[in-house]
Length: 116
Image 1 (cartoon, rainbow, N blue to C red):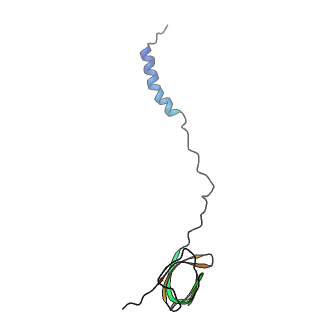
Image 2: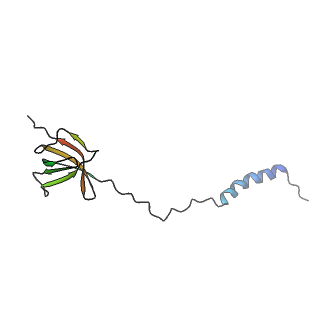
Image 3: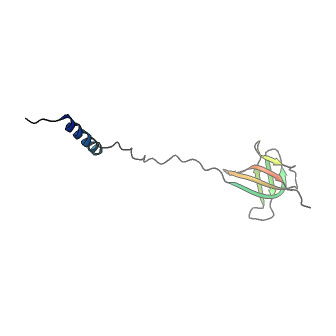
């Protein structure tokens, strides 16, 4: 009868254990989802223009521009519109705005002071 020493048995286990571990299938990460990522609406691009105030009230501003395709532009004014200076008819202004839908929503209106 064949005698197996405990040390040789232990040696066999130690040598074969890593080999068996590599041979076993590893858990795989699931394949990427085939659904496209949710599309978010892009933030409206910011624009800037300048001109002379044609008319102004609490909710709108109309300016005439000295150059460009569009000679007259209308802007929506709201509670978040920042104004610097007194916006009045005839004043030269710079308007920063975003186009939301078909509306030009003013984010800032700055009255241009005449340089000396």
